[in-house]
Each structure stands twice: as C-alpha cells, then as structure tokens.
Length: 485
Image (cartoon, rainbow, N blue to C red; front, side):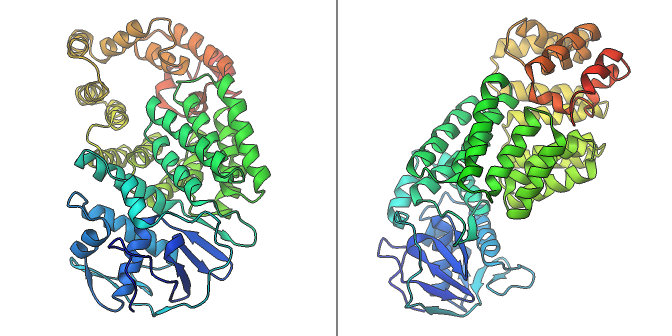
C-alpha cells in the first residue's frame, strides 16, 4: 500500500481499510460498524507504518526510529503500542489475524490493506493534532524523563481507549481526550503533586468538552484518592466526588466511567460494599477493558474478605495496565491479604523493576516481610521507602538508632513521636502504629476518630492482619460491624 507517509512530517495518509476496520489516521480513529475506538497518536503511527509495508517484516529498530525518532525509547514502549493495537483490533497474539510477531525481529501486518474512498462519519469537530505537533508536545529536556513519561502516557492511552457505539456514546474532542489521558497518568503517581496535576488535567478536559463523562469520572476518582491517602478531608472530598460521579452518569447513563466513579465513592466514603459492588459490576459489564473499574472491584472484594475474587480483579487490572507500578503493588496487597505472601512479594519486585525508587513499593515490601516474620528485611525495606521518599540523612540515622534499640517497635514509636497529634497521618494509620507499639487503648481511640471522620482506609479493618490484636475487643467489634454493608 502506498501512502503520503505520516512519519516524516508530511501529511497524514488517507483513510484505510485494514481487515474489518476503517482507519482514519488523521483522527487517530478506528471504526467498525457502530463501534469507534480512539487510540494514542503514536499507536496510530505504528499501525500506519505497518500498513505501508503490509505483508512485510518491519523491524523493531525501524519502528522505533520512524515513530519515536529518538534513541532514548526502549523496546518496552513498542511492546505496549503493539499490545494496544491488538486489543483495539480484537487480535490474538497466539492466533493473529492482524499483527504477526516475528520472534526477536519485529512485526508484520497480515490483514488485507487497501485505501478507502469513503469518509468516516461523525468525526469530532476538533481533530487530533498532526503527528509533528503531537511529538513537539511530548519532548522533554531530560532524556530519561522523556522515556519514562512517554512510556507511561502511551501505556495509559493504550489501555483506556474510548470505545463504544457511535450512535450512543460521546466521542470527546481530541484536546479533551489528551487532557483526560494525562490526568489518569498523574492520578497514578500517588503524590500530592500528582493529584494536583491530575485535577488540573481533568478540569481542563471538562472545560474543553463539557459533555465528556470520563472527565467528570476522573475528577471524582481524584477527589476519592486524595481522601483515601489522607491528604484531604473525607468531609470535604466526598460531596465533590459524588457530584462529579453523578454528573458523569447524567451526561451518559451508560457510562462505565461514571458507574466506576460512583462505585468508588460508595466504597471509600460510605463503606457501602454491596452497592459499590453493584455499580462496579455494571462498569465492567459495560466496558470490560476499563481498568479503574477492575482496580476498584479488587479493593471492594478484598475488604469483603473475598480474596479469590479480589485477586482475579487485580490481575485483570494489571493485564490492562502492565506498565504502572501501582498495579503491581495493588495486586501484592490483595494477595497478601489472602495469605499468598510469596506471590505478593514477586509482584512487589516486578513493581520495583519499573521504578526502583518507588516509596509505595518499598513500603509494601516491608509490610509483607513483616507479615512473614522477617523484621530485619522489613526494616531494610521501610528504611528504603523513607530514603526514596526524601527523608534527610539525620532522620535516617535516627531511624537506624531506634531500630537498633527496640526493633520495629522503636521504628514505629519514632513515627508516632514525629507525627504527634497533628494531621500528618490519618487516624487509621495512627491506630496501626499504636498497635505496633502495644498501646491498644490508644489504637481504639484512633479507630473511633477514624470512623467519625469516615476515613477510607477503615474499609479494610475487618481483614487487615495489623488489626488482629483488636479483633476480640468489644469496642473494636462495635466499630467494625458498622463498616461494610
């Protein structure tokens, strides 16, 4: 197939027919009957290059050079792009109908390809920027940062494509979609800066396209995350999260994103496990490839003690988003709650392969070691978490001294002393620390405050082994019985 070429700064090729799909490169759109899929621009560029050389091998090096034009991109980026294409096209790597892998060399497009003279109907008024403009927006000053961010953005885009019936579902304006994808990326950074950037991007998406349900869902998920991780008050975040989630469903009553966002609100703020499960089940039924719905379902099922179902949901979320470290630590968490510590540790190690300096991954590693009765290994991981989290050297020396003097109890006591009575940590976290140092009455007082504050982390109070010393206490049982319906 001949085309004008999309990878050299020239005009985008005409619409193509590839197998059952009509492909509109200028809009990053795939159409089959009433189904529309929008893919990330570089994913489309990979497809166009494969189509230009249909039935011929295109090497990995050639794909990377032509599409990314940088020596800082690794094979992992290309692997995710191919994964995205196969998922979008409904292809199977083991029995390919579209993209064939040539082991250790590259890929070949094996589906029939021809030019299409028909226009794709109902293309949004704002089309995506040409490749050159898209590339210019993605250039960063530091090479290693460019590679990392490109991989993360590509992976997120690859996983959460806009897919639905053209007659029923809203296709967002291109700039709004781009902002939404960036918002999802920042949301998974699990940091105050990341949540702030996520909110900015989701707000931008909603402003650019006021009828975009996913943008509202992204806002709801951001508010929920900020409450869940203790950086904002549940009392302040809950009404905002619920309002945005319900707005998403007002815009589209069939929105998987809206159902997921409302299910997350019901779980994290209201501890209404049954209704949250119902909403999330709707979300996964309406869009089986919407990762956040599977992620939230894993949390609900783990809090209910349904560990087998929680693990299956977390594994599905990871399958849909294999390049975000948080997916591995989330799977590790539900595996460990189910008593499968060796498997949980393997997932943590996989997360650290993606980001060796992840505070969250090292913290999870320490917690799992602690459950396995390995205090020295647990402390080493906790210390790494503090180091990568930015703790100064004098603080690290203090941590070392506390551990030498009292073991993990000294480490936890130091946390309590540093936090004092301030809001640096949540009351649920404070209760955990009190348990670790043997102050069970103080732990129960903190849990009561956590309940009054409607802290999200309390959702796991009935299954998290840290709370085991309190399980037989009537005061604990009174609190725990009111969490989860």
